[in-house]
Structure formats: C-alpha cells, structure tokens
Image (spheres, rainbow, N blue to C red):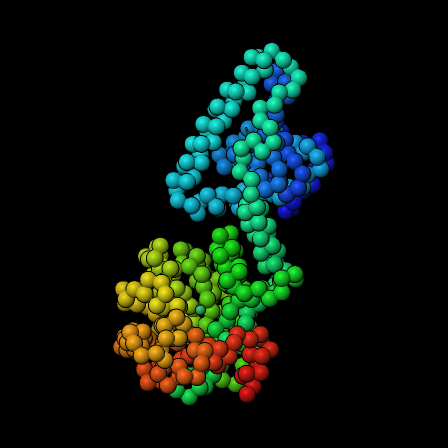
Length: 395
Ligand code: CMP
Ligand code: MG
C-alpha cells in the first residue's frame, strides 16, 4: 500500500503503539496530539508535504504521540526500509545525530506533557503549537517518495527495456557489437532516458534490479536476432552499487544460463566510481566476473578520476574514451595528444579502445590514424529499439 485516506476525525495511530512506517501529508491536515489527566493536548497541526511518524521508525521505539486526521486527509506511506536506507546512505554521523536528537526530544516533550495539565489545572483542551508550528514543509520528500513508488511500479510492470546502440569498427565501419541502454516506457511520461531515473534508482537501491533486467533482456533479444548468423558482442552497464558485494556475479551467471547468451560475447561496462569506495571488494567482483568468461570495460574514461592506477590494477579488457575527449579530436591541440596517449597506452596494455560520441564523419580519420579499434555515436547510429537492431543485423 502506498497511500491511505483517513476521514475527518479518524485516528492514524495512537501514542505508545509500535511503528512500521512514517507518513507524508499529501492532502488535508493532521493533528499530533497526546492526552494527560483528561486534557487533550495539541502538539502540532501538519499540512501538505510534512512528515510525521518518523521518530519511532528511526529509533525502533513507540509512537511519541498520537496522530489524527483533522479533515479528510490523504497520506503517502514511507516504509521503514525507505526511510532507513536514506539514513544509512548518509554519513554514519548523521544517523547518530538523528538518534540523539530524537532521544533528547522525547525526554523534553515527555517532561512538558506530564507537567502541562497540572500546571494549568485545567482539563479540557490545550494547544501547544498552532498550525505550521515548526516542522519542515516542502515538496521534495513528497516528490522523491512518489517517484520511488513509481519506479517500483514500473519495474514490476515490466516497463524497462533495452535499446541498442551499434559499436562499429573504425577501420572498416563494420558492425561489431551493441551497447544495451536502459529505457523506461512510462505510461504517462513516454520513453524516459536513463538520466531521469538512474539517480533515483541508485538512491532507493532498485538500480541493481534494473541493470540485471536490462542485461537479461538484451542478451535474449540479441541472441534471438542473431539466430545462426555471426554473434555480435553485447556491452551492458552496471551501476557502481553492484561492486560492493558478490551478488552481481551470481546474478550475471544465472541470466547467462537462462538466456543461453555466450559469456565471451558479453562485456560489462563500469565507471571508475565503482572502484573508489571499496577497491578490494570491487577487485574481487571484477575477477569473478572475468571467471565467468565475461569481459570488462572501463566506461567514460577521461571524465572521472582518469586514474592510471585503476587501469593498471584492475583487469580491464576494453577502455571507452569519453565523448568529451573524442569530440575535440578534429581540433589540433592538447586534447588530441591526450587521446593519442590514451590509445597508445591502452594498446600497450593489450586493451581494446572504443571512442564514444563519434557524432560526425570528420572524427573518423583521426581515430583511424590513432589506431582506435571501435567507435560508437550518432554518426553510426542512435540507440534503437530491438526490432531496428534486428534489421541492422539482417543487412
Ligand atoms: P513518532 O514518535 O513515530 O509518532 C508520533 C509522531 O508525531 C512523531 O513520530 C513525530 O513525527 C510527531 N511529533 C511528535 N511530537 C511532535 C511535535 N511536538 N511537533 C510536531 N510533530 C511531533
Ligand atoms: Mg556505457
């Protein structure tokens, strides 16, 4: 369940209850309240975009107050795993800070609540804070959680599919392989490009499933399209998140087996970011991927760290030179020398080189002169859907 509607006056939860989720107000108004000595105490009134019920989830404790719908109210549910992942992904100190703030807040508020009715000798109704009493209101949490649910839904509904961009030999312009690129066929937004969902997918951890799904489908589609003819290679992208444990190795092996795709025709593309956080584990993962017979490509080389030590320490078979370098190749100057050095270096180390972003014909002679093996870019073809990929193989 993603959202819930409460009629006016309905209790959302009670003080002291255990908790399994937090909420964001999407519409309506929520009163945070407590009762002491027959006195009803209003602690806060929350409106659209405000979060409540987060404390007990964060510190695994009981609800510090009750929550009630003032008018008909719609809330979006933030599951425990969604909330905790965000805290765990932050610096460890953020989690610690939140924990201690909540403990101190609970103590202070308990003191206040137990003290108030007696001091006012009232009974009846006490209001501690008027609406907009200090919680942070905004669209951003609401938007992130809605988009996250949409991504989960899209994945379950099979809306992700691979597009295929040809990778061509520079020398003779022959089709050698394809890079599989993820597309989200969204029922309302149309065809969504990766730049619009990768970041979100990494934040909520779904990127691993998306990557493997694209890989499996691309393998199946390419194998079918190739039929008995020559089999082009397939390059797939894996997010940095795969390189923190060995799960991806099993994941790839299973899908290779299920699709019957030849492992030695598969290349896994990753960027240097994947190697930075935990190089020891990443190294282990890369070696095991190679044990499957799959090749490794270092993607977007030239943008990130461009570290020679990564080239040297990790067992890459292919180097993909980022388009920002390739585009400059026509112009005389320093970039030309950089690309030349990269290609020479890669060649000496026994790696193949793919030039990304080959958008115009005039880039081909310099690439050829530099001995670059493969090119990829709009000059050859944009990424195309599976049926167009099959047509390209027929020709
Ligand atoms: P939790 O303790 O899980 O359940 C009750 C929720 O009410 C709590 O999380 C906060 O989200 C919210 N809450 C408690 N006290 C206040 C307050 N003084 N002002 C605003 N919100 C509060
Ligand atoms: Mg890539």
